[in-house]
Image (tube, rainbow, N blue to C red; front, side, top):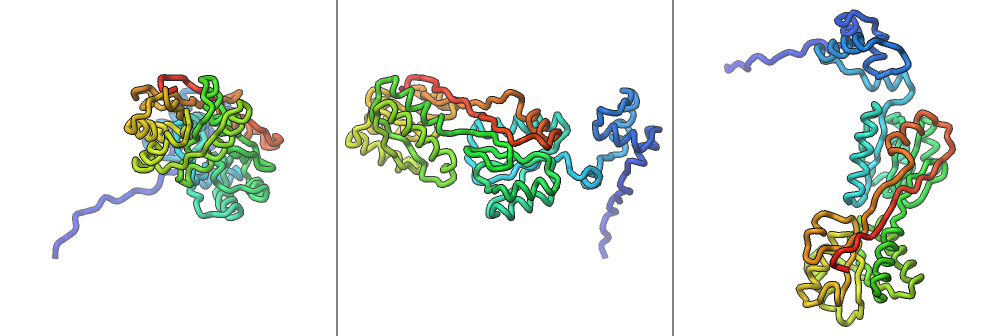
Length: 340
């Protein structure tokens, strides 16, 4: 009979008491140091000794135990839904996560597809987060906000086009993107403007308000807007390009740079001169759009708050009785290049 090789055996899980013995301090001191408690005065030498002992033993604090003691965690929950992941969204996540880590929070993404508003709120509440930041594509109702508050969440924050009663709101009004693009085209003398609307339902959260903003700007400027449904396929773009002369349009605002580049190439292949016969504007101001010939005009979007997002979340957690706040995040401007 063959014999299995000896397997290494794991020793007992190190505890804070083990760290305290090795560092020659109390368990309370270990807790203060490893939980970054700045309210207790501990010398730098002692802090260093505790951290070195924890590293040597491989000790990490027990998150669940800490949550039980405090009644909430240092967790910031980010429910995930069917949200378009453009450069702005990715930059938002990167800046928020790095900022919250700096403030000793743990950021956890939670898949919430298929959950209704009540079930989603209860599922998030079970984790006892310190804060929840809910994107616009994930349902949240005032009742869910109350459930989260009762479970110990210090801050419930929405991220999207509309606020929710009882929650703080980070507003990203996508109407400004469409309005900004169309106002630029109006300044260039264009009056019959196509607006590319992706046929992918996942983009609806952003695409619908961008269309609304484009229509409002066109109405104010005495221009005409025509919706151009488009699949993200070369054949679909070629079909639109083939109909371009019959459409009688002189410009197009595409949902984002990827759709703008797709349609622009199809227009060029159909012999439509850009920008003479079709001025083109995208959104996201991607690097790839700047490398095209002609270079792509695009709406550049930025997030702006009076304080960094992570600091804003931390302030709302530390002051849980703060009345619901509204912060308008989105700033947009069109960067003119050769395509318009």
